[in-house]
Length: 245
Ligand SMILES: [Zn+2]
Image (cartoon, rainbow, N blue to C red; front, side, top):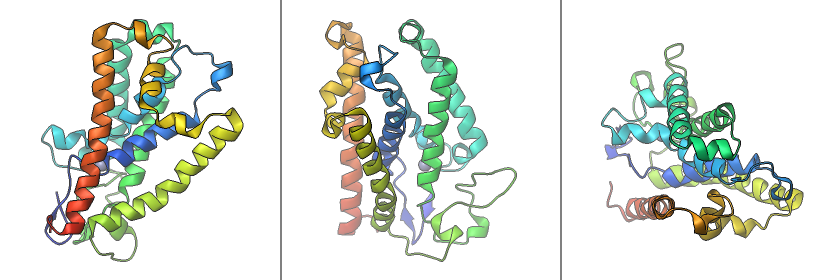
């Protein structure tokens, strides 16, 4: 998908970190007080929702037009159902032990994909919005393209500007979650950024005793998360340096 002044959008790395971290914090908001937790594997929904939040961008990976089909509420909801079903069936003994209901995970997956669409409003089409096919969230009922510049006055199609606007929107949300969790549940906000603790808690208290394959998968997921963040930063840097224009 070409946006703005003939500039290629960043299909794979496009704000993936923002999407994932938003999903992470959404699930974190719903996380139970660790002291009174009912679930043994309390961090699992956080990981689950973080990945749900990048689900609509799977289109770039499977070779279908970016930001079209998977960026409609109808298809995104179906994706959330399919994702929940696959994860639920694949992890059935683990999830049953942790007492997660399919419906609980589905709600988190839906919140994840909806957060993705909400953040994607900060994309710029930069061309004739009446012919834009991307981000038509209410297709087939309403073919309005939900790009920022299709909703309000035209804005310069600059990737960095988009990232900044997105983070300006996003940072207060992040701060509210951190402060709320800190005061209400006495969580150390910085502990949320400790990848070792995050991975350990993602498997319950017994990360060390997990089979090697599960540890490798978790470490790979963690590394993917970090690599997406680095690519995101590189994308912004290249854009600023003018290599992408
Ligand atoms: Zn997207």
